Image (tube, rainbow, N blue to C red):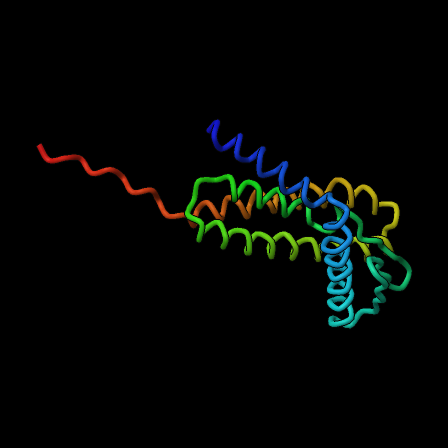
Length: 165
């Protein structure tokens, strides 16, 4: 358990440290956030709604949201990746967990972004409370659920065979 905790802390510090370097933010995170905003806009228009996207700003009739750090799912994804990488599992399963985890967190985050945009139109007084409390809790529960489902898919360790007497 101690080894897992130390590995978790080390990987977490490394990943979060890397992500907050200015070149990583400028050339990886910012374009990712803009792309996430574009996908949200495309989903809205694909289902018959109206949406306009400019960089990291998503606008629907009556409301706009700017997707910022902590709202792009990167930190939640890094938390999930940290625990998966720190857990003693075969690398094939870790890599699979990283991919599925990323997709799971970002899928829910897209739902979050779109629902918050519409909430801003329908119930603007609720926007900040739902944004900062309800959706934050749901994203963290998503991270936990994905990790637990990933754990269930891991192969059981082979039990040592008792030697014949």
